[in-house]
Image (cartoon, rainbow, N blue to C red; front, side):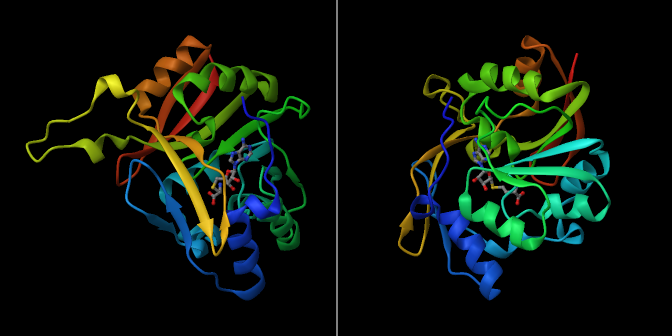
Length: 243
Ligand code: SAH
């Protein structure tokens, strides 16, 4: 697994987050992918309040308990919401500027840490991965390493709260059938690259996973997957526990 951290000159999302925090506005955070048209991440959405969050995320906030790890915490919206509810949350992110901004925003425990770096070895009751949190796993082939890492970080009774989307709708034909090229690998594996102003990040893999595939892999590696909530557009919240 890749255990690297970003540096400020290769951290477009962190730059966008830092600028939005300082100035209350940001330029376009552009997203490129070989599979999709160019897109943008609305930077203000990374600063969403609990009220502005989709039901899936609010459900995750309600269910999170004990020592909570917020993985890929970004601007810290979930960490802040949990802290305000008096919960004990530790936010990690590979982006130096996201972490710096979280600390400035009052997140008490925020550290620049890569989830897969085994030097980080604490235990948590809840591991939260939100805003298509499965993305951090990168590719299906990384799922074994991911589940192994979760076993190191989770308390025996602990749980992972993760959201994702089934990307099959992108391949849906007008007649309702799916034009998915099975030989091309799993359809939820996406490559992305981001740009903010003249700061261009390195390309990275991002995994969107349908619930059935997630449960299949989870079972294979000793976890039980539950579908807690479905969103409005092929998105869902899952809870994974040691089975
Ligand atoms: N959870 C936040 C941000 C989602 S964007 C929200 O819902 O608003 C995904 C975040 O994951 C980015 O900030 C990115 O820097 C971080 N990230 C990506 N790979 C990571 C890894 N291996 N370990 C920790 N954080 C990671």
